[in-house]
Amino acid sequence: MSSPGRAGFADWQAIRALTATYNRCFDRSDAQGWASTFIPSGRLEVAGEGVAYAGHDELRDFCSSRGWGILHMTLDPEVTVDGDLGEQRCNLVMFRRYENRERPTLLATGRYTDTLIRTPEGWRFECRVVELDNRLGYTPEGSK
Image (cartoon, rainbow, N blue to C red):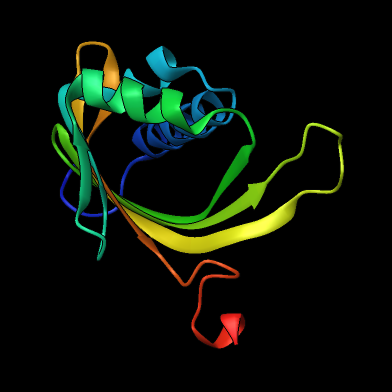
C-alpha cells in the first residue's frame, strides 16, 4: 500500500498504462476493451453538459456510437494514491482522424479528473470527469 500523496512508481505506471489503454481502445472503437477500463459501475461524465454514462453497458454503447476517427492524447498526469484508491488529473488533446489519411485536425482540448480503484485485475476507473474547453468551431465567436 502506498502512503497518501504522490503515487509510487509502480502505481503511477499502472494508472498511466490504464489511461493509455482507455485512449487506444476508444480510438480503435474497441467498446468492450474501453468499458473494461472502468469498474462495472464506472461512470464517465462530461462536465457542464449534463451528460453521463454509467455501467459497462452504457459505456460500451457510447464508445460504439462514436465510430472510428478520434485520437486521444493525455498529458501532464498528476497521480495520487491512498491505499487502494487513486486520483489522477491530466490534460487532454483530441484530434479528428480521417480515413483518407489526411492530416489529423485538432478537435478539442480539456482535462480529465479521475477517481480510481485498485481491483484484483489492477487499477480501474471509478469515475472520469472530462471538462472540455470550447471545441473548435463551436464557439459563438467562431460562428460569426
